[in-house]
Each structure stands twice: as structure tokens, then as C-alpha cells.
Image (cartoon, rainbow, N blue to C red; front, side):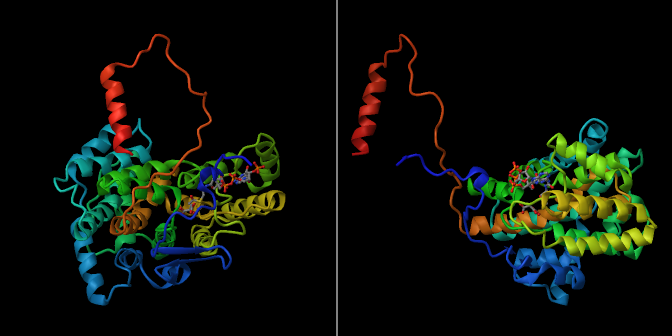
Length: 391
Ligand SMILES: CC(=O)SCCNC(=O)CCNC(=O)[C@H](O)C(C)(C)COP(=O)(O)OP(=O)(O)OC[C@H]1O[C@@H](n2cnc3c(N)ncnc32)[C@H](O)[C@@H]1OP(=O)(O)O
Ligand SMILES: O=C([O-])CC(=O)C(=O)O
């Protein structure tokens, strides 16, 4: 029998801890946030209420929500120092790198960044949550050569996000679809970016460092970066009539088709029907049946060929496109939502911390030595002392 430990590549199938934040149930194809089905939350509650639920464990009362919104709205204004950094980076850096830098800068300029008391984490999280729409909106506006738009404290989170981006009050169809997408993106158990945030937190590093690291993990096209990649695929294909030829070529070249597949769900992502319905309202509103045709054709052909189903990024990409965002802004929008889940997991990790440090099985060269090396007496004595201490 081999004494090599069993390797679980990519930690696939490994359960590393408990969580009370959300439950991904593959058998019933459901997703619960603190016990509530995400579809019900998307239909019945605003994104702010969902964030409150994730952070405090219960949906807010009217009074608690009013207080939460009051604080959120008081933090919405874009910090001029952050605006200057964005000005410098737009045009050369990807928007995800700019958001990551902005969050890092917020952390570096918070004199209490190290405070990890539960109330301090929540204060920082609420301020960051409130500032991210202004950061993302300003990046989008700079990309188009436009100036910043001041936030409106008479608008809810989703409406204000769109207001700061486009400078006009959103149509209810756009606002609703956007709000639903933010709820669906908010949390998904131990996905790669959330796990990254938990790893950083487990070292007792600070809140911002955990979020910055999580942004780095989210950026990759196998994770959050897929919503941008989906739109690039749609642009590349161009028209539903070209799907078959495009797929022949892409699969022939062993390319991954972005927006399809999932580490956990193997028979479809629990969030896709809700986001697909939201996309349909946008398609009807903006009169873009061509997008519906392309969406349906690519999905049908890819599922028929590979038996791999769409994930949440598949409907979200074209939805953000229809709302009017540039493709490179899609993953920063995901950041603005997922900061909710990251924060809940950072809190949970801190409340019951254990340093996250798995093992590896070495498969490099056997032990070898540098010619001429002679251990000095102090090193030998120190090694002997250590052995004695270890018994
Ligand atoms: C919000 C989110 O983060 S959702 C995920 C977003 N990511 C994407 O949409 C990127 C595209 N999808 C993928 O790359 C994968 O499905 C992942 C990374 C999401 C999950 O992958 P894993 O569980 O690790 O499965 P893995 O990548 O090993 O795929 C298993 C098999 O299915 C194939 N496969 C999986 N997804 C795809 C895809 N989208 N296109 C083509 N083939 C795929 C793989 O090539 C592999 O085939 P093989 O066994 O012949 O080598
Ligand atoms: O759970 C995952 O691995 C990826 C995902 O869908 C998410 O983070 O929303």
C-alpha cells in the first residue's frame, strides 16, 4: 500500500468547516441565505435587506432597515483621494485592478484598520459597501470620459448605483433586474474568493486585506471574471446563426466556454432561473430579441454537446450589457455585491478562528546537498537543543 496521502486537487469535495451563512444544496438545487431561499429574497426583499440578513442573521425590522440605510447613505460620497487614484489608473489598468487598488487604499488610510471587534468589522463593511457603487460608477464614467455624479440619498442602493453610473434615474425594469442580480451574487458558501477572504482572516490579518485578496480571487475567469468573459463570447459570436460554427471551433481548440459549468452544481445553478427571468424582462424592455436568440441557441447547443449547464454569470453578463454597463465593469459590480458575503464569512471566521493551513505531498527532487557545506558548531548545538526540547 502506498503511504502517499490522498490528494484532493482543488480541494474538490473537501468539507473544511461549518458555515451558518448560506447553504448550497445540490440535491434540491437550492440556495439558502441564513435559511431563506434566495429566489424568495430576490422577489420579496431589497438587496440592502439581504445584506442586513447576511451580516446580522435575521431580516431587519422597519426600524433596523431605516437605521442601516441611513448609515449606508451617509457613506456614499466618493472619497476625493480615491477619485484621484481612479483618474490616474483609468485607461491603463483593468477596472478590477482599479477597484482592488481603491479598497487597498481605503484600508491603508483607515487608522483603525486592525480593529477586528465584531462591531468594528461591521462599521468598516457598511462604509465599504456604501462606497463601492461610487467607485465602480466613477470608473465606468471615467472610461467614457465623463465626470463623477454625486450620490442621491433619496434613492435605494440599486437605483443610486445606476444613478451614479448613468446620471439618470433608472427605469424600474433596469433597477429591479439589477437589484435581483445583486442579491443573487451576494453569497455562495466556500467559493474561491470567499475562501480566500477566510484564509487571510485566519491569520488575524485585517478586514481590508481579506477583501483585497478576495477581489484578486474573484477577478479570474474561472470565477467572477466569467461574467465579463460571457459577454466577450457573445460579442465574438455576434449572431445566433453563427453559434454552431463558433462552438465547433472553440471546442475543437479545447477552449472553455465561459458561463457554463460549476464546481458544485452539476445539473444547473440554483440562481440561473431567477436571473434568466430578470434578463428576459430586460430583453423585452430594450427590444433585443437577438440577445435572447443567441443566449438560447448557445445554451441549447452547449448543453446538448457537453451536458454542462449555465452558471449565474451566463445570464448576468448580457443583463449588465443591456442595462448599459461596459463589459469590463461587470466583475467590479460582482465585487460590490459579494462584499456582503465576504464580510459575513470574515465575521464567522473570526468568531471561531483556526489558522487555515493544509498539507501538501512533496514530489520534488530527493534530498541533495551543496558541495563543501559544513554545518558550523553553533548550528549543530542549536539543532541538538531543539531535539532535546522536543523530547
Ligand atoms: C460565479 C462563479 O464563479 S460560477 C463559475 C464561473 N466560471 C466559468 O463560467 C468558467 C467556465 N467553467 C469552468 O471553467 C468550470 O466549469 C469551473 C472551473 C467553473 C468548474 O470546474 P471544475 O469543477 O473544476 O471542473 P473541471 O474544470 O475540471 O471540468 C470538468 C470537465 O468538464 C469540462 N468543462 C467544465 N466546464 C467547461 C466549460 N465551461 N467549457 C468547456 N468544458 C468545460 C472540463 O474541460 C473538464 O473536461 P475533461 O474532464 O474532459 O477534462
Ligand atoms: O460557488 C462557486 O464556486 C462559484 C459561484 O458560483 C459563486 O461564487 O457565486
